Amino acid sequence: MKRLYPNKPLIGVGAVIVCNGRILLEKRKDEPGKGKWSIPGGLVELGERAEQTVIREVREETNLEVENPELIDVVNSITFDDGGRIKYHFVIIDYFVKLKGGTVKAADDAAELKWVPFNEVEKYDLTRTFKEFFERNFKQLQELNSCKEDDDINSEFSGSI
Image (cartoon, rainbow, N blue to C red; front, side):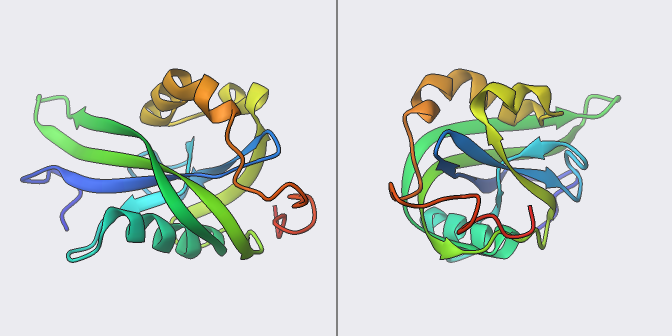
């Protein structure tokens, strides 16, 4: 799939993983948004359902196993170059997911992963689309919990972060 100067919008997914008041953020390794923070995610492959994509992408980028994707929001990301041509065009379907297991380890498109308290998220250099998503859905996100009540992200899901 041609990401740069595409001839049609690309469909992507984002995974909202929240545990005990902290959201898992990913520092992007590649463009678009290289070096900025967002949530794990990626592009839907041909023949793959969006719900399957979010589970696969979380595994590939974070080493975590997740389940039960629930739709939260759809985000449009269109970036123009200086000449007014469309440089990037993504339609991103964001899902809340439940943690099943695994140990956090940045891989694939993730340069770094961090569990970030909600009140500190906006201190990070966020992608434009994630910042808009976070502001629009802040109240709802605070009510979510991907962990079971007895899960501890400081031990069970902490890994190398």
